[in-house]
Image 1: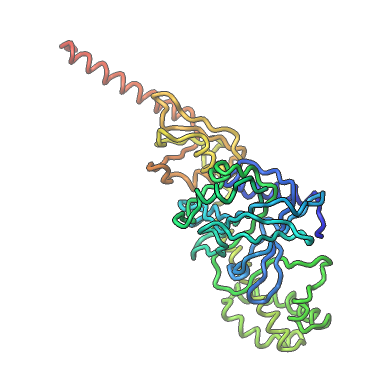
Image 2: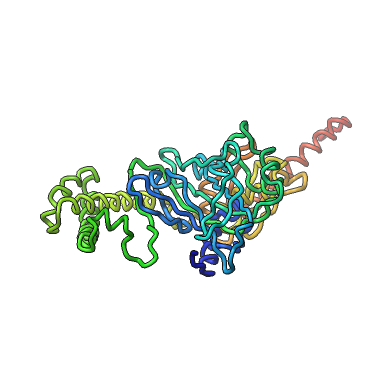
Length: 412
């Protein structure tokens, strides 16, 4: 039986909000149980525990994970659960035209004596586990895993919506949940995975005491001394290899790997293992530096403020559509859509933070939404009122000209 810590629920809820899973996937999230997910690294056989927001490689998430459910009460084994794993960032976080992508969807899960969720029921058609494979060049994707209490007649009702001809792309969890009476999720977590050519990566391993697990100890030589040597090499070489990779290339750092056994006084096997870990750290640091360099600077342009004026919108657009789009860039205080003849196709989006507003404008000005290329501007009342007044004057002059023509009135 696994332990349950109520603070973990609070941390998960906060992580869902901070990562915009609320509202991108769920309108709200109030978990009553802790959903734990564990992958087994296909290369090292190491158990990887998914904590909300952890970054895992594609190789580490190749195998179907195990699921565990715990709460502050004993969970009866008679209750059935539904599990879903979704990617709301397909094909890329900047272009979610085929999201949500359905990586897994199935019911009939029960909690066993070890809190593990097990089932003897096949996943829904076209919903068997598919491992994350974000495309090359994409930012890391969010992979969201949710647990629901299974409603009555779930299998029969669900297969009316998800069958052999149903694509995995453009799945909508909210629509599906409403149709089968799934209700709100009782637990959830998520992880990040980006495109990677590496066969290894950084992740948290499952260890209750903080000491190395049996698999990692065995890989280091089966002894505390070997493990300590590995740590010594990893800590020292992480710095050396990172500096070396920054100055030259990560590939060139293989030369340092061949010499590092002498430098740190450790065996070749431990050295090679530590060097590989250090090179991964160097790659991670280089990626982080590259990402930071590509971010917009914090300097705000003249006239920047928390209120964005959006125009050229489709007339059928609603507040939820805009909230889903703009809410990816920060917390929104208010959205107002024009509903009069003069204001149709426009909206005001008010952010809590001006930097979030700037980020949204930078990414969404010219964005293709519902067959329109939207225009996003900072709200500048003086300029926009002047433009509106000018347009109104032109309209009135046109109406006056038409009346003169109709009644044969000359200016003389």
